[in-house]
Length: 389
Image 1: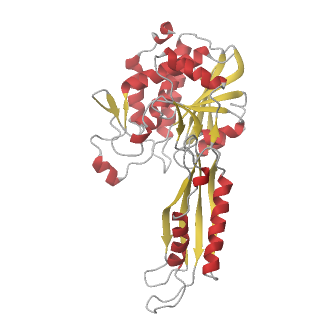
Image 2: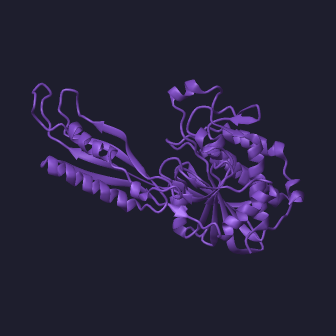
Image 3: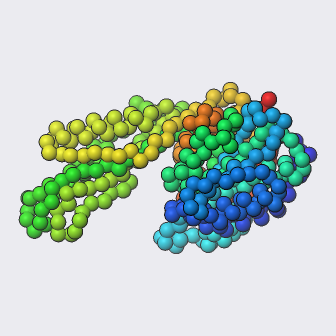
């Protein structure tokens, strides 16, 4: 494998990566266009075939392909092009401009450096090297760059049942895992809960039904309800919490409606439907305490957990790749939700492995160890060249 690794130009890889980090592809509100164009241009100048999947105006996925000796067992390498915003308060805590791609002491700092332009660019550069050197892998290699992963995953949803990936069997998600093999992914689901009350003038004590107070009753029950029966050391913990609340019409009016968001993170094997069944039970509990209590909810998204056996050919391939770069093999659970939770609906077999540390993302001074960028590119290239026969 070393002869292939010698084809990698680390300086070029770092330059391509740094330029990607400098693009503020912030989402929400969905400003991925310049990053889409950047990825497109990389593919064009290297004569790699690709297609665009229009998701919304100025927002599109990119699906590229390197033809292998067979299109059986095709492998998708995927990464998202969007990054989370930098708030005004967070900006004050940054040591560098978050879109400057500042390099210091072997690290590159910038929003999206770990999550996940390092993984995406590593995979892109690997297929560029294959194309430049006329290396034909055993299987077709499909590169999928998505938009909107950080929000509603509109990009991956737009690819469901697409003919562009219909022959794929395996899915490598290049999210930051510190190069650990995540063969399990936790689930996630969330909903908006609507609580109704009755309006009254704020100057009159004891009149009306304050929807905020009614909502607090339900929120307290959610806070004090855990899912211990679904949690384990092997499959992770399940928990839920209230992450947003909104109520009121005007300051002098007792509010007759209160909306809050419940977000649930689920252990492997914990079904999303069981979360909402529990919420139904809690609503009924409040109704037994307050007969006029009225609450409903709207499920915004359901992202299911998954588990790929350690004996699966894909995991074996990842282990071979790690061995080729002298990196130890560690299995782990990926705590966040990724495009995998959507794309597995196409019966794809997933794994998550990539450069970067999840603990430094979505916060100030996000960074990536540059040496890990180089290792990830070699890992992906090794997997592509070895393939699954």
